Image (cartoon, rainbow, N blue to C red; front, side, top):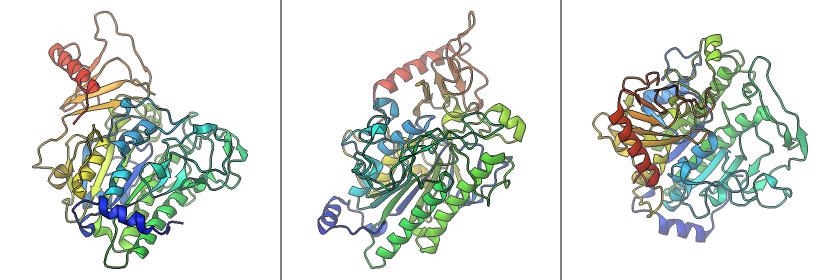
Length: 483
């Protein structure tokens, strides 16, 4: 299904649009985005993690580990928007429930790399909506305004999270099997209703198997790599960009038999181990095809996990260590992400960077990697960080500020070591979401993350000048673009 032939006209357009860098000098790019994996899950981030992650750890040893990398939001949909467009998600008010979240004509990471001569594919969870949204009735027609019209030559995946109906597979812009049956809702004893093997009731394709979604994504990603290698045995090779937004370890937690009981963090940890194995399988496919040396691999996550303090106490595993909060929150656990980058010969092995990064930066960094130029008005919140990747110890910080959005639409702001949240409470899933200040107490939050990464010491009352400055920084960032 991945070996569709390019027309002569298409090849001509690609050649004209490609930058001055020869194709041989442009690396293949594989971007693997885990879904709801916490900062404290990989053992290369948390030495006390009860989830073995040998493949993610290996990438970290062979490349760069970022310790201050952030999703632009603490939930799935807005993070994906920011990653693909280079824009903070608060700049768009479109809803994936009724239309494409990404505006028509908006340059995306995939679209930019197409113009640089790349063959592009997306395999996994899209979750950026389609024209018509979830009201679709006729599944025999093309599904417009999806990945194929947002910068990807090929797509194989599911419309949204694996706990959100309708449940069916999409190949390019066509439904594989229509969702004509009905799935009952599913829950796991001993967990909250948004944890465990949870999915919502709704339309489902008769042949759809929830347990086979992650293995299918793995097979399709490897299949794309293998077919690209088969098509590129000649002297001239077109580089590829493979975006793999995994559906896991987001609910439903469905570890296969091979992984059940293997972690120390119950079914969540077992499923996270399965994610790590998927990373290893994709990297293994690059090695099998002898193209790992010419391929840039990135692994990261879209937001924090659904992991309560009670889970940490019960299982002795802290999925968000050493951070505060969880998925959805304005606190660090909602949006500070594990992120490792490997590019042999270009990124030094075993290095660590504490430079500030946002997933919106992928677009501008891709421009630096390929030698291309972003058009005016594109990726306005994207900052190129190739220099940081290549020499993290000597590079000067290129990003000093950051805006992240919580599930409750609370905009938290970073300026250097300082973080400002314009209300009390998490702004997201953790309780209290919003808290009224006591008499004489501050109504906002201010943290020095260099000394208090766990956000336990609110300095809003003791640092009034800094608080006022951060208010002004916040107003300025929200009212203008980053670049």
